[in-house]
Each structure stands twice: as structure tokens, then as C-alpha cells.
Image 1 (tube, rainbow, N blue to C red):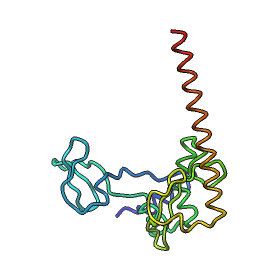
Image 2: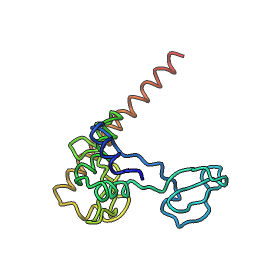
Image 3: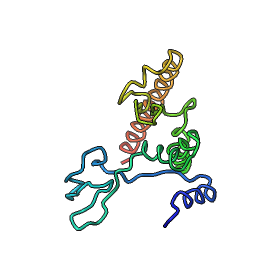
Image 4: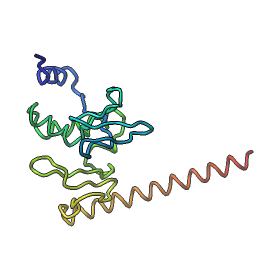
Length: 173
């Protein structure tokens, strides 16, 4: 028998920046059955998504389940597991404004309960699911609002620069 947790622990030791990814499909939150994935008809069954010929088309692993897998069967501390599902992937991609709670970073946050089930989601400071905003204190809400305002100002400056560049290109043409 294969020692999957042992192999993963060896990989974690050998690759300090190892992070989680998922090829989860839109069928992941749906009951087992037939679905459309792009132009293909697929069947979701037993945690996998397959084409009619049996070829694997994707998984149903969500990132919150990956977090639970890291903290449960693999026994990683929550902070280390959270870094492996968020921070380290962002660092690998050179996205220093993602994957962390820090001044100047995008306010992309997921709130989980004690069982690590998603309770709230915030994307770029906007609540898109659940009650995350209610869990923030007034000071935290003000900081998120300030950062969001700074992001909007930065975006407006970048948009204006793009328009100026486009005008200049048109004038030169």
C-alpha cells in the first residue's frame, strides 16, 4: 500500500514553498450526476468528474477541503496549512499584494468556522458571501475601507494613464 501522507510529508520537507492547487470543476458543489463542462458532457461521481469514455476531466476538491486535508489527515498546524493554500502560491506567482493580510494588500479573505467550513468570503474588500463583515471590528472595517479607497484611487490613476497613452498613440498614428 502507498503511504500518501508519508510521501506528502517528504515533499513538504523537500520543497519548503510547496502550495496547494485544485482542478475543481463547477460540478464540485453539486450532487453526483451529469453536467456540462465547457463543450463536454461529464459525470460527477465519487469525488471525480469524468468524460463519457471515463477520462478524468477534473476533480471536486475545493480549496477549503484542501485546507481540511492538510490540518486533518496530514496534521499540519492551521497557520502552516493556510499559508500553503494562499500565501505561498501568491509568493510563487510574484503577487506580493495577495495571499496575506497586510497594508496595501488586496482584502481577499475567507472566514472559516472551527471545522474549517467557509462562513464568509471577501474579494478586494467586498463581501461576496456570508457574514464576514459582521465579524470585523469597527477599526478593521475602517482599515478595509481605507485600503479599498486607496485601491480605487490607484485604479483610477492607472485608467487615466492608459487613456493618456492611448490618446498619444492615436495622435502619433
